Image 1 (cartoon, rainbow, N blue to C red):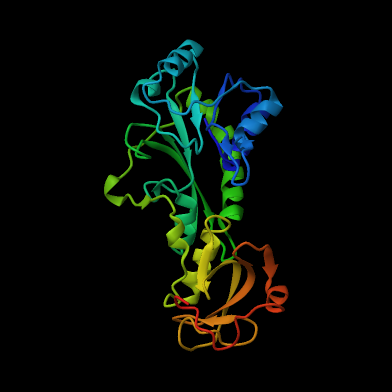
Image 2 (cartoon, rainbow, N blue to C red; image 1 turned 45 degrees about the vertical axis):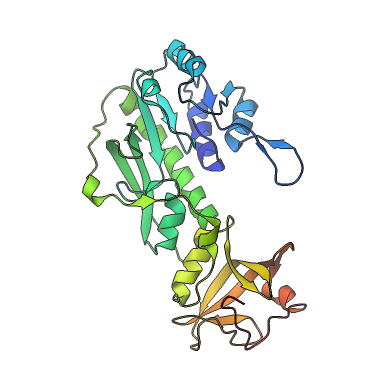
Length: 302
């Protein structure tokens, strides 16, 4: 059970290692932003390529058809990777070895919908994956293995997702036989240490120039590409895709030079890639050729 690109390498690895994947569950196709074309999920795409049956119910809740289907599979194990739906209690009991979740954090830290983004935005130095059993409470099930990686200053949501996905595909392939043979020990999480990675809202992307340069860069990285970190100037929204830390000091939110370097609470932000509302992504040198944002401009609620 999975939906985004994050889940694709894990499914491919299981398939390549000879495990019989009876069926794949994924989220239903969604309409594109422009036009009415339906876009299937990355997991559905790879499943169709590999010739694996795909099911994409809108909801599993009180869905008798899917409950009966999964029951009749008589499956050994279900692997869940960023599926995007809560799995009801009545379904969790329908495989011999339960439902295993690959979660992109070091549980109990960052339970919830956006663990990768939150770890970057929070200035965490490391993250990882946790292999856990699913229970009714979100991401609170017992954990068997945790695998750590470092978060670099240049990591954004896409690069860190890719690293964690490949880590998960390698480690799950090492551990799955032990799960099937009941050789792995699953230990309860310490709920008192739990933190929650709530869903990212578009409004969170607004840049607060009274934060430090490092905090702003981590927000840019954590929210790249969606929803993005942004500011408003002359009624237009500008999304920053990449920035670097500068050492200039001044009033936060004021443009310090002709290269669009902006003062922050501490240090400054050198904008490297930017996208004006309705326009393409541009390198800063290209953007500056037609920009009205000049030295001394105030980017605070402008």
